[in-house]
Image (cartoon, rainbow, N blue to C red; front, side, top):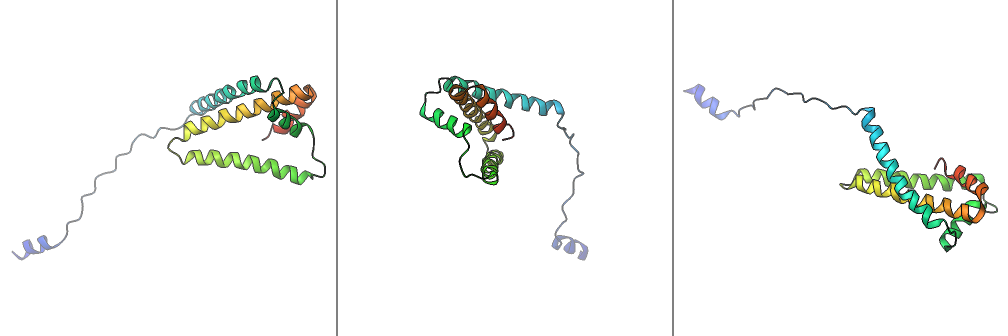
Length: 146
């Protein structure tokens, strides 16, 4: 009787179930290359309309962007120019990071790639329309790493 009363007063320990391992699906290089291809196509889907929009070079925004990319500001040091480019790149990386925290992150990331392609295509077309091929080459070298 005493044993029955003790067993009723003690809290019972939960029964542990054996851990069942689920098969782990590894990311393959094929999956990564497919994602890179999809985002590359999305970038081009924005880049080509950007070229079409800026091909005339007559819009005020296009003229301002062409002037910005073809002329160096007087009195701006190399460190200041590098800092400005670094700040723009950092802002883009922060936007990509914030897309990772959002439920709609993949869609927003695709929209970010398309908008970047649209802007870069518009800038390239405006520079080429205003200043020719040599300025376009300089623009490409300026925006290559960023």
